[in-house]
Length: 377
Length: 232
Image (cartoon, rainbow over the protein chains, first blue to last red):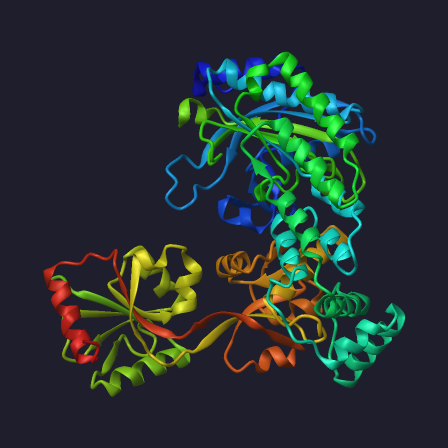
């Protein structure tokens, strides 16, 4: 336990451990390529890099979630093997321009893997984070609840006309891409002229489209090196042309989707969840099971920490920065804009699979707390 | 007596072009220590100390405030720091050393013409393969910023020390960001520049470090030099 961070952190740490979990030391040095692959290039300016004696490019961990998922992928004996870990340690993140803080700071966290009861695990992690903040004397925290799995589920099940159903489905978990495709679908995005070739390709069956593209590439002496195959180019050319000539998405459907994407009511949680159900119903999607799951989560939180829901609101999509959260997600902050959250957490069921290139799968949910932000710092 | 330090490229075509530009303004550069020496004098400007260095060293020294003035490529300083214009000012664009920093993809990608296309391909690739779209470049900072501005989210930058244009054919990356003057090398490697894929139109510039040790004397010397160079 790091003593330098004071009694508030020790109180938070004790509260976190009280929710159960084995203390685990996580790796500090990680393969840089893996971190960039998982977290994306936006984190690059914040990372500290190091070279191994063998020339391997490494970086210092910038959070506890990726090293926890990596460690789990290495030590778990089977898929979904249950584990609950509490971890504590420094993470290393360069300050943004104008940000006045040290480049290294302590995080404490709880990571749970393989729980068969997802809802109970979600609640446990939420309460652990809440109790840790309370133990540190954090009062009047604003709580934001999100669901990274909601939009992908709705779009996959919705009765949307093609090509828009497929185009939206492909980017459903990606807030900015979703907005971009929705703008195209409503005819408000940048319009483009399509060539005679594209128009032809759009009307062919996929096999004929591919052979036509192969012929064009061969005649024009164009090359296609690397991972991107002829089928990718032909299929995307066809999809892009179909979108360019397709009827726009009906305004009522587009408006409903847009309302879901932007749903961020500061009012009652139940009203927001009910609004999701109503909006999804307009798209032909029954969200009653989803609504029931949230009712269970909120009831459980209400039982144990009713004050956690006093300043809580719900958003349909996770903030872009946490794009590995694919289910319930939350953050707590002193400010209602959530610029400097003291705790963040959520479900990341696909991360272990991604980190292990598919060799290990595990349901997972976790949270981290930043003690340096206690007291409104 | 405090003098103004002016750094110039130490070799190659850039050095010749700098000398020719100075000569056009009636200024003769005399290298001390012969052709291989790394210092020089400028006729008529005893208070100007000339240092000869590589273009990248000049960029670093300007950004660190170690020299007062220098001639180097805009691409070099823009890549080296995010707050570049807090640390230096561009006093003159010199019309030589032109090089565009561009985004290029294999010419067989007939479905990709714009950065918006690239953003879609990157998202598709991650969804289909679970892997991010790779861009090989030595311009990691400029590339990351440009991709952010164009909402290309699902990509990864692969640091490339050299022969970047060969990266797609070698299977190291799907796309590249590199400098080009005529586009001939890109064409020879079966690559094409995206319609809106010009990140920076760079050229050699005379730059003034704002962090250097400026006082009344050095300011006066620099003002005289700028006057002679026709910059005021």
